[in-house]
Image 1 (cartoon, rainbow, N blue to C red):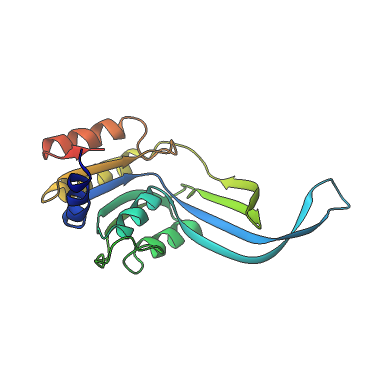
Image 2: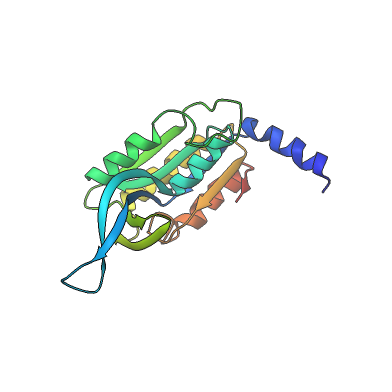
Length: 197
């Protein structure tokens, strides 16, 4: 492919209408400095200076597409817990990611976050000193989504498929696309004539 062809394709990206479906999570970063070793165990003591929270997993795909100027339809499942509420707030936030790769402002995405009672929204907490990651702590319960949530998710995908041409599946093996959901989502996408990524 010639460079000119690639540039032409990239310029057409913002007009691409697509769906992103998969495992969303909350990425939590704890930044600080290490100046000593703990007297309790041979481990570094992190003096916390700041914390940030961003969308992870399929949510990172959403953010990257927004940075390219797209406003995709986003479909996932979260728990009815504080992390799920934080994911909802971040997903519905102002258009675009922190880094803008396109001059064209992206519209806010169409977000469908289904809440499953009893489900734990995945949180990945990374502890970072300077440029070095010291530890990652995961809070999660990996399980397929409930049958009723699966039906709702597939109904949302069928409704959203109209007028769009691409479906992106982002599977981190947390359960949203497990237990046959990925195959069903692909069938919905193909029936609508979508390219499946």
